[in-house]
Length: 340
Image (cartoon, rainbow, N blue to C red):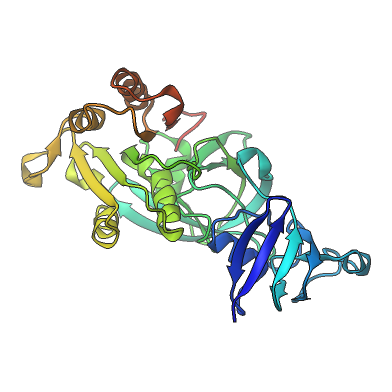
């Protein structure tokens, strides 16, 4: 039997099913409550039950004490509503509201997606979860003190593993390590989530996503997040690459296009080779967008890829009517200080 949950002080309401925790129900309906471990161990999701009855679930006393319970508090990651309830907690409204953590992780799987792209699936410790916004990134912390930045390719609701898409950079020490010597069960450390490139869900304008190469990773997270929450905004993805083999997961946006009537996928190749037998769009990806949209005044654009592509797109899109505050971007720097 479904139960109504009212969140104060925002006044937001949502419905929870019997088999759902309060946190899971809130996340499913698009309300971002703070959380960490999602198994009653850390206390990040602690809030107050103002009215109604709950099942507290299983938790560690270090995260929720007897005094906390006497004060009406609960851990929403393990607690279930037993009827209509009203709770009091902070809601995450932006990246500044999310805790940045430094955590260890284990390489769960190395998955070759293309000749020069590897998917890294990272497993966090059993009592940890990373709360993040779709589109953000993490910094892998290397032993010599350097960092490597990678966008999270998985949506926040699908957080059993953190997924990174890594392009092989010849001569790049870390990417060479990933492609040649890294093994499953290796231990890494990272800091995150980071960045202001995330999906703004409060808007209602149609969205143009522009990805270059592995710039598809955060766009994938954003789109999967939007689909999961049944966003009905019109969305189109332009994914630019040099050759056909550089579109390393083309079947995925192709599948989305079949499943979601509000989504369109347009791949663009800048240098197709004869064996590609490419029948589709060619040229620079931002120029394809300019051709298709004579005016961008009513759109939002999310762009991710090489700095040259992002800069050229920004200049041209604003000239074509895109408001400055409707352009969101993350430029991947292929160098020793930041490689995505």
